[in-house]
Length: 139
Ligand SMILES: Cc1cc2nc3c(=O)[nH]c(=O)nc-3n(C[C@H](O)[C@H](O)[C@H](O)COP(=O)(O)O)c2cc1C
Image 1 (cartoon, rainbow, N blue to C red):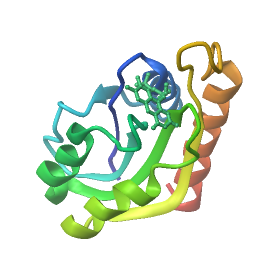
Image 2 (cartoon, rainbow, N blue to C red; image 1 turned 60 degrees about the horizontal axis):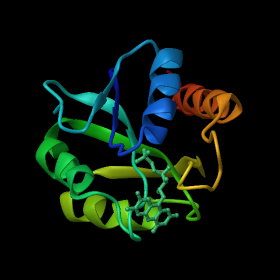
Image 3 (tube, rainbow, N blue to C red; image 1 turned 180 degrees about the vertical axis):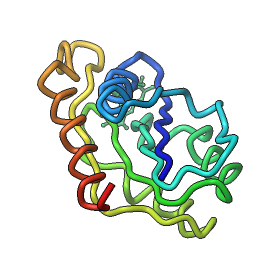
């Protein structure tokens, strides 16, 4: 069973969670421009909101790698939104990729708001979340 961690970030917030998750799972996190060279049964995919949408490169990652993705598990950060599920689920449906309903999402620093987030606590919670998902899948 192969696991991969991919993320898109503009100011480093989502990368913090990606590194925490990858560290716990013993893999390396990489940006979404790095495609999957082989099939990953579970892909932890990190993305955030920019003007009420996720970046096109996240959607493109799913489309381009659909044959190598088993399931996607979302994680991310934003200033106000609580989930990227609704947006990403449209691309998942379009491509036939399975998207888990469970997701980790927390506040991310934006201008003067949510300073320091995600913080150490958020990163630990993200890593715990990923570990629980893997356990639930019997991995
Ligand atoms: C141009 C821009 C637009 C944003 N739009 C939203 C938004 O619509 N909703 C929201 O909750 N946060 C919004 N944010 C805040 C980011 O989602 C938040 O800072 C996030 O943690 C950024 O993650 P990153 O550093 O991994 O890119 C926006 C940030 C930027 C820079």
